[in-house]
Amino acid sequence: MRERPLIPPAQERWDDLMETPLTVMALVYLAAYALRILGHDLAGPLRDLCLVLTYAAWAVFIVDYVVRVRLSGLGLFRFMRHHFLDTVVVLLPLLRPLRVVSVYDRVQRRRDKPRLTLYARVMAYAGMTAGLLGFAGALTVYHYEYTAPGATIRTFGDAVWWACATLATVGYGDVTPVTPMGRLTAVGMMGVGLALLGAVTGSFSSWLIQAFTREDEKEDGKRPPGDSPGAS
Image (cartoon, rainbow, N blue to C red; front, side):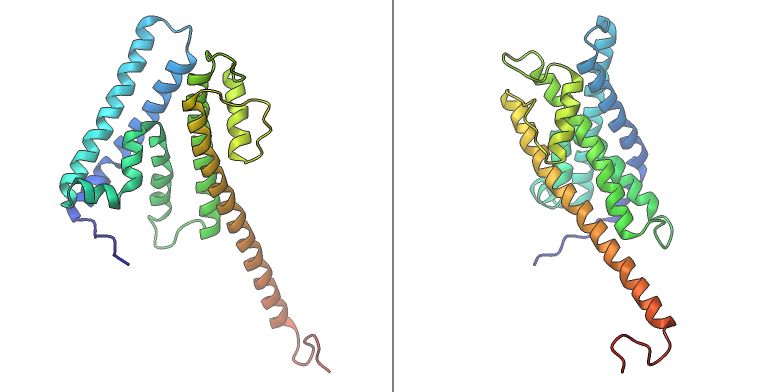
């Protein structure tokens, strides 16, 4: 199996330098996009400002990507192959707020030992990811659906309800997307929902097994010799 190339020191320094600005720009992008989609009654200048902020944030993401490609020394196609998720969020910047999850992970690891256990981190990151993706998915579906002929998703509340049911893999079917982009978004959210549900369920089950195992070991340690179960 081919090993992932080491990150050059220059790229690491750039990543550390841009960590906070990119996180802020990701949140600005999400806020501006949300205001444009939900603010039907916004005055023209405010809608134009949201559009400018959206494209300005996207431009920052593209510049950051180009700089990281140059600093990596891998070339564009090798960098895309080894940093697939970074490429995806540049093409689909609505997913960029997921960077908050990676920043939170770095904060947790600033000390020698993370403040949260592995299982707690997995559940926390999965919850944050589900919330951000659910909101982004609801915005996207609402944007393409609420004016479509025969659409059942007419309000943002309908879109949020649909996103929650889709991420939870429940699929009530009372509201469903009818446009190609809405259905494509649904397919992506179904896959993400299955992955997140499996991660949280598996981590919680492993944590329970580990907790019960520790309790059993403590009980065995307190039990006097010869009193173990099955001893004659």
